[in-house]
Structures are given as structure tokens and as C-alpha cells.
Image 1 (cartoon, rainbow, N blue to C red):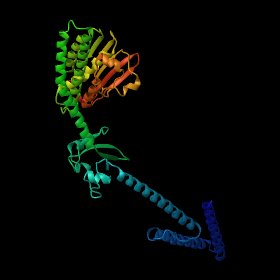
Image 2 (tube, helix red, strand yellow; image 1 turned 45 degrees about the vertical axis):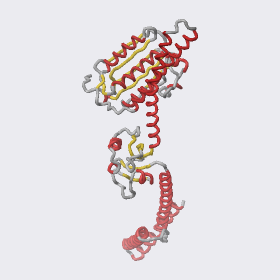
Image 3 (cartoon, helix red, strand yellow; image 1 turned 90 degrees about the vertical axis):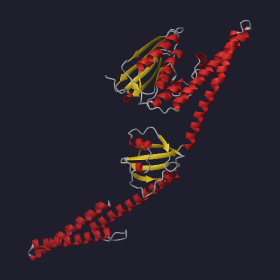
Length: 436
């Protein structure tokens, strides 16, 4: 409304001035001269106000605009309004940045913002303390020039930042930091370093405890089992309850031995430092041995087990670990598939890697159990697991083996129709001598 009135008033003034110029021109008998004088006067008037506007914008220290009539009053007020609005926005943005920085400073983790060239753009107080960064001196410096650990540089240069990396702290080798990285804004990355020293220490203690206890339990269990076998052979005339007790103790002792063996295997896999690219696994030969073992174990239950193996497909990896993973999946299928059921083992190449699968037509697994299958000692049916002699560690072993080989376990199961346990080794692990 104000805008329309201002322009209407300006046009009215201009029409009035033009009319006066025409009248004066007619009076002096030279309309062109009168119009030229009018235009000159208007140019001078507007240039004066342009000068005042420039001086106010670039030299004046006051926010209030100069006073002016007509359209120039409207222009001054419009610029003044925009200045106030931008000033309010800058103030709000400043408050927002201040709150962000206060929140980042309060975080217990070290936080660093870097650009896509790994140059430091900002860091919080913990980053300066724990990572040894200096602010603002290190602004613009590459983070890998300050944190020089090879694993960190490899992690930084990698395109896959879904999994964190754990390395010693640059300022204290007795501390262990977990580094995570995620996209942050446009062409920026957010690097978060968390102190996991205590968690890592507890995990190492747990691994050592499990390994040591399992190893120490092997000897007494072997002695107990030996004496139970002697007692079983020397109690021919004893009461039935005694024979039953000895047989049950022998069964439970062997079950404990199997559990300890699985714990030792799991501990070895967790502590393994073998490089997966150093040796080639002859998967056909390994699966052939497992097939012979399944044939020996399958005499009573008479499953229809079929192996479909690509004889030329070899992969890099740790053979003992891969054998544990494959045999656990196959033996699980045998244990939990009804007598005379069908089991199919597949090893073949796909477009994105080497594919292994064990498919059965057993009872299947309810969806609520699928996410917890690889947890240690997790059992769907505890009574049935005790009957089959399962330790509850088989799928945990499979999970750790596959993680070591840059893969993961996939489970597809439907109740009453069966299950398929599979994994895909990445194409980088396929041996180079394989020809498609």
C-alpha cells in the first residue's frame, strides 16, 4: 500500500513538473529549452541523492537513513528495512553457531570438521586435548599430517566409512581411540574420536579369560571322561540306575568338551592376526572333506545332501577359519532338519563375489529369532539344542570368521518351509587364477 502511494505521488509530481515546463516553454516560446532544463534539474536532483545514498552505505556509521522526499524516501526506508532484517538474521545465526559450538565443546568425544581434501575446518576442545590439535593454528592443515598412524590414513583414504577403526591415541599410546567418519553438510566430513581404552581392555581380558579357562578345563574333563569310560566297562552287574548315571555323566562330559573346543576355536578366531590375502583356499577340496564327514554322520538320519561346487572357484583367506564356518552351517542344517530331509550346499561365483549357501527344508525359524541367531549361547529351543548336543557357539564362530573375511551372514527362513544360510565373499578375495 505504501509502495503504491509512493509511486503514485512521484508520478503526480513528475506530471506537475512536466506541465509547468510546458507552460514556461510556451511562455518563452521555446518548449525544448524548458524540457531540457527540467531534465537537467531532475538528473542533478537524483545524482545528489545517489551521492547521499553511497555516502550513507559506505561511510556513515549510523543505521538511520538520510531524510528525503518522494521516491528516495521509499528507497532509503527499503534499504534500512533490509539492513535491519539481515542484522537480525546474522544475530540469530550467530546465536545458533554459538549454541552449536557450546554443545560440541560439551561432548565427551573429540570432534573435527574436515573438508573433502581432509583439511581441518573446525575442532572442539576435546580434539585439541586428545588429538593434539591447535586452534586456530591448525586451521586448513590436513588431518593426516597431524594424526599419522597408518591405519588412520588408510581409513581416511577409504571410500567406506561404515565401520569404525581403533588405533592408539596420537598424544598417549596407552589410550585407544575409535574413529568414526560421516558426511556433514556439503563437501564436508565429521570425524569423531571416542576413547574406548576401558572397553578394549575389558574385551581383551574377556578373550584371555575365555581362552585360559577353556584351556585349563580340557585336562580335568579328559581325566573325568577317561574314568567314566573305565567305570562304564566295569559295571556289568551293577544296578540300572548306576549305568544310566554313568552314561548321562559321559554324555554331559562330552558335551562340555565340545563346548570348550568351540570356545577355543572362537578365541583363536577373535585373536587371529593372519592376513586373508596371503593364502589361497582350495574350496573344492575342503568341501569334499566336509562332504565325507557328513556322509559318515548321516547314516542314521538319512538326509538327502547334495553339494553343488564350482571346482575352479578358489578364494584368498584362512582355511581353518573358513572350514569352521562352512562345516558349522552344514552340520547345523543336519541337526535341525528332520530325518530324510533335503539339504543343498552351493558354492559358486556371482557377479559381485563368491557365494556360499546351505539350504534345507526343515522347520524354519521365526522372524523374531533371526536377528539374535549369531549371539553366543542363544538358543531358539533350549530342550532341542541340548538333545542335539549343540554348544550355542556355532553361528558366533561363523559370524567372526565372515567378519575377518570382509563378509557377513545372511539368513532367509520361513516357518514350515526351511532355511537358507548364506554369505558372499567380495570379488577382491577371489583368487586371480580363476577364469570365468
